[in-house]
Image: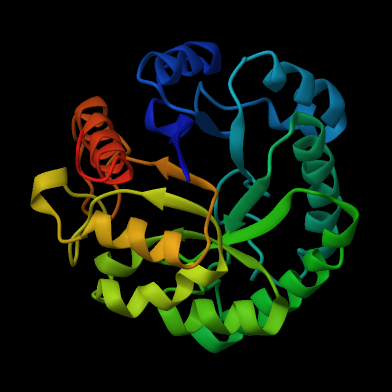
Length: 273
């Protein structure tokens, strides 16, 4: 396992500046998206994925994951939205082409939202339909397709996430903080680690998606151990964010990032560092 850092944690920087920050604090990789100043040009990536990949490779730091928004934000053209499959499939093929050319091992997006007129079951069934279509593309590409079960999505519970995995074969971008915010315990989330292809790290507590490192309830050494025992060998992306969302507050992102970095490095060194 190795550490990565999410570009959207530093939305005021350019992508080049962000990569420099990540290098300066000894991150092994970065996660990128199309959001904020740190984002890639999504229109360019969809039109010419090889050109976009060349720009990413020029950053000089491996990219562990690309977070894709099908529409203008996480809700537009989300996978649970009826009628979105064909357009999203066209985009996803370009996204996977870009990821393979840039050497990005995973791409993720949200499982879907509960859209107007839908129940939770309606949204989950629509997500399954989309994900099955998306997964038909998977054999042609190296980059793995992942979904992130998240608050305010069609997959908010560990059971919802497990159902999507079981019915579609999709992998997970696993973020314990979303489940903890919704009131689930860490042990209720642990069975999902075997489905993780990517992992986000952020402290949280019930009702609060993001908490300062010493004020949350997540036991990160236990998470690291569960991932290792499940055979996970991928990236652990530190994802503290600056904007307010579901009671997250504008924390000192750099301090929280370094605290999480040191927590993992100390665990990886066997507690000797």
